[in-house]
Length: 107
Image 1 (cartoon, rainbow, N blue to C red):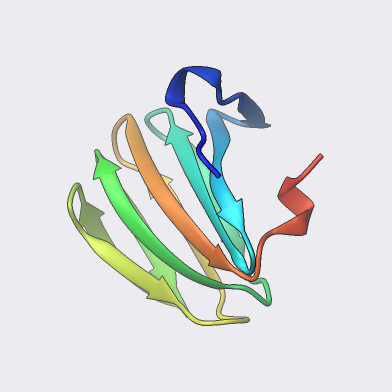
Image 2 (image 1 turned 45 degrees about the vertical axis):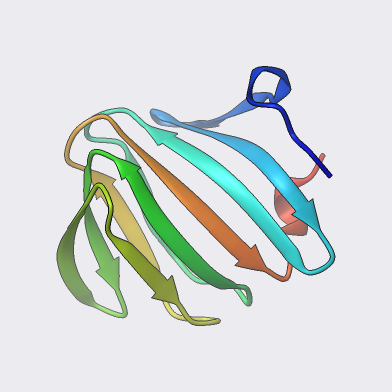
C-alpha cells in the first residue's frame, strides 16, 4: 500500500491537533499528528503498542507519571496500557506507529 502525501486527508482531532493516517496494513498503522503550540494530547492509555518519532518541534511527554522533554529526532516507545500524553511546546509534528491498528482512528 502506498499513501501519497498530497492525497492523504488530515482529520481535525480538536484543540489544535490534526492527524493523517499514512500507510497501514496487517497489524501496523502509521499516523502523522500535527500540533499547534500549546495543544494537548491528553494523558490516555490504549491496548496498542506505540513507537513515536518527533519529526519537528518539541513536546513535554508524560509517560506513566514521569515527564520529560522530547525534541525533533527523538523517539520513544509506549507499552500497551501505559498512560501517556503530550503538550506541544511549539508547533510540532509527531509520527506514531501502532500495533495493532487503531480501529478507532478509521472511519
